[in-house]
Every structure is written in C-alpha cells, then in structure tokens.
Length: 432
Ligand code: AMP
Image 1 (tube, rainbow, N blue to C red):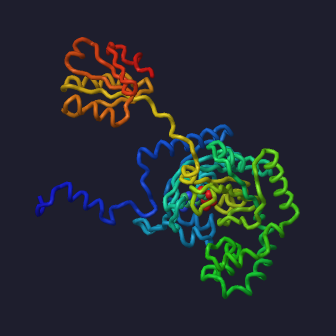
Image 2 (cartoon, protein in one colour):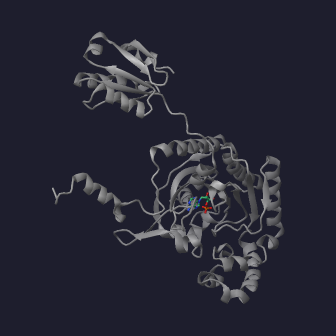
Image 3 (tube, rainbow, N blue to C red):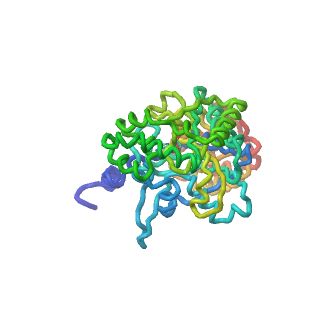
C-alpha cells in the first residue's frame, strides 16, 4: 500500500485525471438514458423496415481517402473535422464522420451493383467529427440513415425525404419543415461555378483563409462556410437553383410535387446547399424550432448523389439517402422509454438457495421475465432493499425450507401482495 492512501482514493484520483476521463464531446450513455435511445432506434427500424429497407453495418474505421475523395477535399468535414491517424504501418485511417461513403464503398466492394443493383439500406451507427460542441452537436454522435442505390426518379427522392419526415412525425414532433433545394448535377455546377467565381472574386480579400483557398479549389463550399463574414457574402451570391438546366429544374419541380402529394410540409430554400460535395440534385433538411435543440435546428438531412459510386471506382449508379441525428431525436422527442420487461429478484438464504435460484433463472429463459439472483451473504432485509431500489416487479424468497417444500412466497413489489406459490409453477405465476 502507498503512503497512507487507500485503494479507493487512488482509483478515484485516477478516474478524475484528465487523460482517463471520457474524451470531450464523446459522452457516456448510462443505462437510464439507453431506454430512450433504444426506443428511438426501434422506432427508426420499424419505419425503415416498413419500406423494406435492410439494415447493414460497416466498420467504424476506414481508409482516409474514402472520405477525402467521397465527401470532398475542400469540405469542412474533411479539412477540419476528421479524426485521422496513422496505423502501425503508417497507413492513414479515419474514424468515419458519416456513412454514405462507407455504404457506397460496400456497394462496390461486395459486387452489390451486379447482384442486387437496386438496394435499399439503412444503418444506425456512431459517427465522429471534431466539431465545436454545443447542445445537439457532439464529437461522437449516432446517426440513423437510409441509402437507396440504383434508381433515379423524383418520386424516389420524395419517398426518401418523406421517410425522414415520418420518423419525426411518428416521434410526436409537430413543428417540422422540410427545406428543399437542388444543387444540380455536374453540368449545372460547371455553369454555376463560373457565375459564382465572378461574384466571389471581388470579395476574396474579405473571405476567411479557408475560403480564399476554396475559391480556387471548390468555390461552392464558400457557400456553407460558418464564418460570419463569409456567411454574409454568401447570402447575396447568385443562387445555384437559379442557374439549373431545364432538365434539372424539372426533376426538382417533380420532386416537390410528389412531396406535396405525400403531405410533407416543405419550403424551397435556395441557401440550402449542404456541406458535402457528392450531392447532385435535390437536397433536403428537416428542421424544427424546438427549444430543446439549442442553436441546432436540423434534425436530419440528405439528398441525391448520383456520382459517388462511380467516383469511388464503381459503375455509374444513381443514389439518394439521408441521415438523422439520434441525439437530436432524443432532445426533441417526447417518446417515453420503451416498456421494460417484468423482472424477478430471487432473494437467497444460503448457498443451496443461490444454486437453486440460478436453476430457476435458467428455467425462466423462455419467458420475457428478467431475473436477478442474490449472491451476497447479507440479511434478507438488505436483499429486499436492493430489490426495491432497483425497481423489480417481484421478489421471491428462497431458503432451505422453500427448497425442501417446493413452495415459496412471491411478492409483487408494486402491489405489495404476497402469494405462496409452487416453485415448479413459478412461470405461470409471473403475470402482471
Ligand atoms: P450531415 O451528415 O452533416 O448531413 O448530418 C445529418 C444529421 O446528423 C444532422 O441533421 C444532425 O441531426 C446529425 N448530426 C450531424 N453532426 C452532428 C454532431 N456533431 N452531433 C450531433 N448530431 C449531428
């Protein structure tokens, strides 16, 4: 033992030390918060599965070029927000900041473009971005999202956007608006780039350092810079939506019409350009005015990205998708925790009772009752105190007498009602 310090003091000191606390912006979710998280995740799964979307998982870590090529070198995410590090062989790896690029990679890598070119996928997974933190914005956060590969039709874009809307309306959120815009395809962008450059060049000395660089690499990204002086200049820039070719305009118009028919309240917002390079047509952002969100207003966002699969080495494949923030969903939703399963606490008096308790617990494996056996050698009163504190539905007391007689007292901890039951028929008695 060290100089008078007790073991527990040392442990507490170690936990409080900066380098063993959780990383800033990456938060624990303790069991009591898990119920709400799981309820929302289950709700998302139901909404997505109703459309026949299938769930997938991809690794948390990917090769860095997947994101720099997929999301775009000159984007905020790639330039400033990625957790990138070399592995032991010096290869650059990145904690995924989003899932669309990973899904496109999986679609190519597993030959899905051949075996099942039309694929509708969804995921619920953690993402990582080194962002400035505030309510609703974290460095590790979870997204639930949808990616539909292989089809191009305005009604599909509207379907995907309406699924995002359905998730939140189903969570009881009422003040929802879908902001929509079109960022146009590659050809539209070539035309627009010229117009934008003409507008931005005279302001170049007033732009932030990043944007002065972006003017040459990717002027479109100046439009979603978060620096106030850049925002002001961007606000008066010619809108991309105004320089779309007729075909792109028509596609966007048809998407909006479909949204209207489906009943999604939408608003055209020409400033909505999304911060990722891969979008190639209609884009959308679902916003809420809920105070719980703090300064964040966007619950989920997405759009069409017809060039990404090809850009990553696959065949030309149209695609559309969105991602929503699980933490933001938790902030705005009044969905109460999913109903927890009924639970039984088996109080035990002696070793034989503990073993018998374990046997009873495995016999109940086919029921939906969760069971906890007391393993401490403490007085019955202390055992029952633990049962009450942990919210068990029932407590059963087991001792030598009960084992011998095959009968025991089952107490309903909600109603305080006690009944003598046959241990062989325990499962039949565990009804609420
Ligand atoms: P994005 O991938 O940037 O289009 O974001 C899609 C959605 O993910 C947003 O609308 C948010 O709900 C959520 N989101 C994005 N970044 C964060 C973050 N840093 N913390 C929490 N949620 C986020």
